[in-house]
Image (cartoon, rainbow, N blue to C red; front, side, top):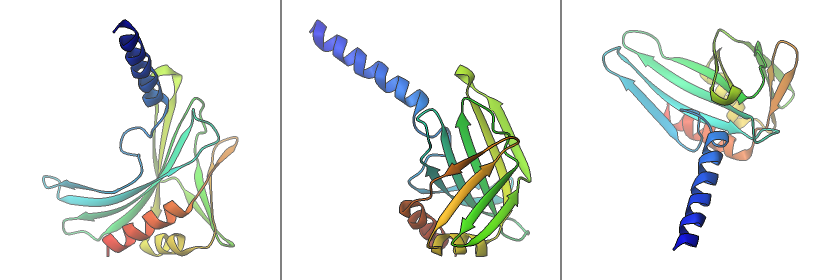
Length: 173
């Protein structure tokens, strides 16, 4: 019995450690198209998260595409980047290459935090339209680069991201 308890405790602690450093934080996990509604404020949104493989298990990156509908206002689309790691990038812009055409997005808003354990979180927001999202969902090759103050990080776009983006477009017609 003592041996089983020790094994259980070991597995539990490993799981807790993995949860702290693995898996996207907050709402930026991948695998579904989500919705958010705030009747008091009069808006609703539909979003999809594209979690990107990173160079290190200690870093996480994601893109989010969101369709926002507000009462008595035109529908807008927003793209945001999420970065979680142990060093600052100070994201200034996002570059996305679709096939051979380069698109550059300046950050229109951002939020950064120092989290437990010395990790940081950087969120940046970019103005985008549905036409761009459609181009990205249908591109043969996609390259993504977060450009910071002194260096950059690249995100790996995969076939599952393309499929999620196409599903998002279908659901937000």
